[in-house]
Length: 296
Image (cartoon, rainbow, N blue to C red; front, top):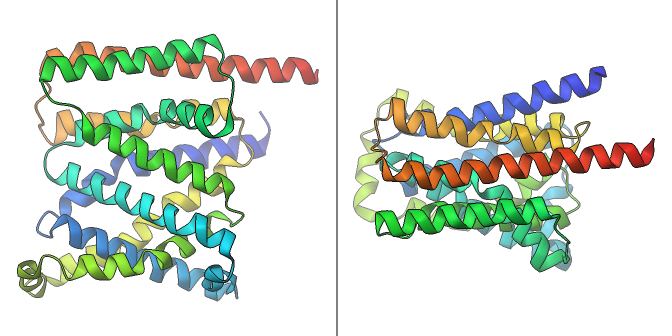
């Protein structure tokens, strides 16, 4: 294995491990309302990212709004990732980490839907089968639990749309985050003022809690930095396998650390999802081998 590929694997695995254990961090902030956590995450991500970019004498990202094309992509992307961040924080801090993990298990399948709808991509039979198993798992969970898994699907949808928009933006990972958090700053300001009754709670937070709030910026940016450095030399099949580290860790935390209930009826539904994940990963591996054979 080439050194660049080995480094890529290490950086990418680190990124997904960090994302997988991130619920532990949000749990430390349970004394703060989810809307305020989200507000501070946007603000301090902007401060941290902006500082790095300005130290690099990169100011182009500050003027993203001067391009109508970029504006049409960045604002929807900012709204999508803000909704995704907020919903994930709320899910973890209200005892729904397992439902959140399901959203990231089915996220690759959501990418398939995006490819079909927006890029008219053709799917190999194995990916159609994977999509069918995922749909069956979601349907089974709805029937068995009596409630639609809206948290899981909303997380998958918001991140799917975010990924779609990011695919079309020319900015680098760090510049993109700077542009998106700057675009989301008005939303952060509104969230900071809501609900008014919670404002008094912020004044009573300890210095240690404020330190954790400020560190929400680096905690958000560093995994993205790792991912940006790791993903470039890696084939899609490798990233496809590695990305499931994140929801697996979130699932483990939900069951064994946070003590969330996982009824036996959900095992069947999750089994369908896990089969779809395996089929999807196999399809990526087969595609990679076909590309290698053609080049050879």
